[in-house]
Length: 299
Image (cartoon, rainbow, N blue to C red; front, side, top):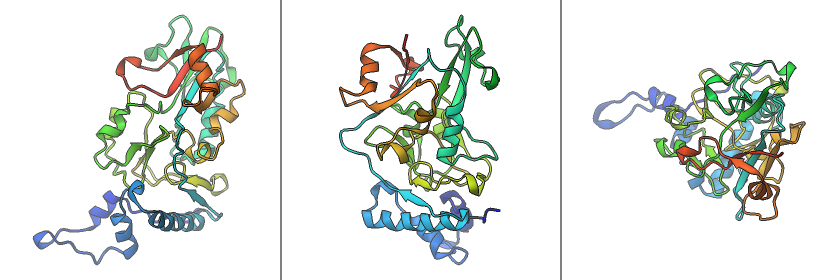
C-alpha cells in the first residue's frame, strides 16, 4: 500500500492562508516546508545550488512514498540540439504498444487512467477525418482492412499556444524545443488545455495512483516525476531519456519502426533525411503552431 504523500500546490497553499488585517496573513497553520515550497521560484531561474537542494528533497519524498530509491534529474538542454519526431502513417498498425510504453515510462496514473498518446483509427477512403475517427477500436484485431492509424500526442510546437496563455509561466519551451511543465508552478487553471488544438494536455482530476511495483524511479524534474492532483501534464519526448542520448520509450517499443526521432539541426540525422525526402505533413498546419512532430508516408 502506498504511503500518502503530502502535496501542497501553490493553489492549495493559498487556500490555507486566511487574510487578516492590512494584507498580512496568518502563518501559524503552515509548516516551514510548505512556506519553502510556496516561495520557490520558477525552476529555470534558480541557481545550481538551489536546484540541487530541491532535487534532493524530491528524491527523498518519492523514495519514502514508493519504497524504492528514486533519482530526479535536472539534465539541461544541450546546445546545438533541436528535437524532432516523425511518424510513418503507412507503417503504423494501431497496436497501441506506444500508448502503454509511454504510461510505464512516464509514471502516468493508472486510476484514474491518463494516456499521453491517443491512437485514432481512420477510414482510408475519408483520409484524415477527425469527425469520424475512432479512438475506441479493438487493438486485438488490427490492422483492420480499409483503415489506417494516426497516433496523436503533444506536437511540440515551435509556436506553442499553450505557453502564451499560462498565467504563471509554468509551461514553457526549453532550448532544445521540448515544451515542458513545472508542476510546482502549475495552478491547474487549464488555460493551456483550452489553447492546445491537439488535445494533448491532461489534467489530474483525481489523486494519481501508480502501484509501487510499477513506478519508474528514473525521473526528470520537468518530465516523468510523479505528479500531484490538480496539475496538467503531457508528453515531453521522454525528456528523462532523450537528454541522456536515448530514444523515447514509444520509439523503442514500436514493432513496425514507424516512429523516428532525432536532432533537426543535424543534417545527417534520420529525421532530416525524412523531412527532405518523404511526403511530410503536419497536423492542423493552418493554425501556424509549427509542430516539430511530423507525419509522413514512407511508401
